[in-house]
Length: 397
Ligand SMILES: [Zn+2]
Image (cartoon, rainbow, N blue to C red):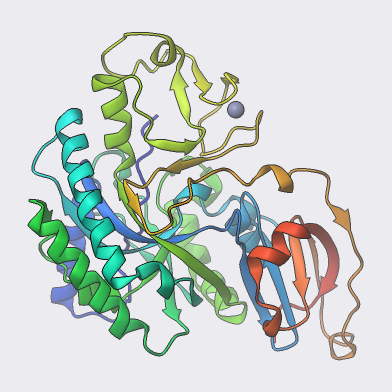
């Protein structure tokens, strides 16, 4: 399997100059390289959900595994569910990237530890976690060409949601935080990414929704392009809100895999569960992944019979690329289990003004209707009250 880590890149806003777009293309090629670390604002749709604002008088919250898939299913009931393919543990907003000058596991470990200590000291001074969570709104879908991507990613378009923070002082504060982080990271011998500045990131915040495979034939490049205007219009009419509740530094997923396979069989780069070769688990085997080797879930040893897409159908845990440092000191654990019991169905009362409108039938799992935005306390409400709603509502405002 050649899935690569999602790193929230894309080209961001589509209004850049040609020069900027070329810079971005070069940058996209770089994104597929191994060994990069990213500074990310973490989005946790599985545990914290995303809120959809259908119109002024109707909002829904999606939470649990595949929350983003459900969002697109809601917009496009026939095929939307299959549209995004980024894993649930990998949603984020990237704010910058850097690279360590070493590659070997034990050297990396030493440098990571050193950096972690420095960042802990910095956090004591600037208290990033107190600035979180931050709430973001996304109402614009952008699709960027994958023509310049490398290896097996060539031709796979990025699909991103452009996001804006609701806090008016977000830009100023995040710029200050990122400059402090950059100084600390560079002082520890890391090389900050050239080509894109912190302001480049801040000015085009986005969440990558689709990055990986072209394996789903329905959503081929041609299909995505054919659907683009319809999807963009649906996203504009049904914007989402979500929170970022931690700032993480994560390594490229592939680097984590390589460190375990080639250098340290005890190294766990993931939280939750991931796929392992059986022999990775038991032995001493060093070497490249054997495509014919049976893969198992690291949590329950279940034999994985289909392509790993970030969670185990047997134990219902999912994979998170464990941050090497985070403002969130709590260990990351899967919170999926509360969501996998059979949901209740509750009828939703229709607002009178919807009655004469054309309706679309929705059948969604994991939706919590919220009466208004003041109830925006996702964590508490969603975890406690996961329900399915089978409702008829008009999606257009
Ligand atoms: Zn499992």
